[in-house]
Length: 123
Image 1 (cartoon, rainbow, N blue to C red):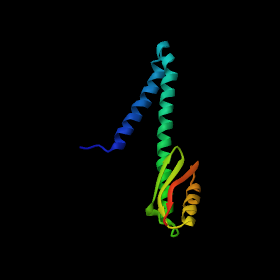
Image 2 (cartoon, one colour; image 1 turned 90 degrees about the vertical axis):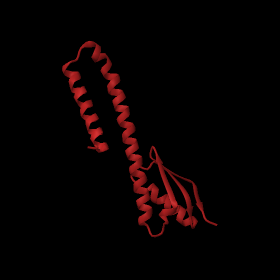
Image 3 (cartoon, helix red, strand yellow; image 1 turned 180 degrees about the vertical axis):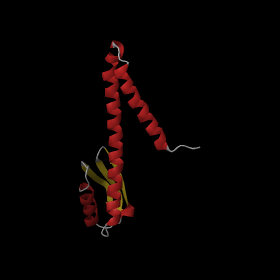
Image 4 (cartoon, one colour; image 1 turned 30 degrees about the horizontal axis):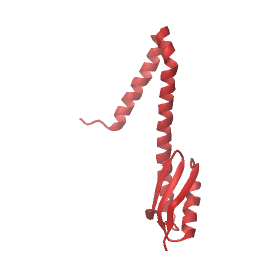
């Protein structure tokens, strides 16, 4: 039987939780010295995962906002997000459409900045 990818994530999270709980029960001096670095590494990994999820969410939200707006041709605008910075590329019909795309992208929660240097206005 093929397992869903979330199954592996759940198993990994459960194992990590179990190890952290076992650490408190089976702690000795050697293990206690290593605990802070292990916890810091786990925290950094979680931060990176949260950033990726946030970037993916932002990209999806910006794209869906473009597609829902009748004044934008969202199919011709490519959206990418990296650490909260949204990059827009492609071609729009007018300068007003470009400005609207930038404004809409900036209005999305979590967006830190918008780069539209690669979003061209058709001649």
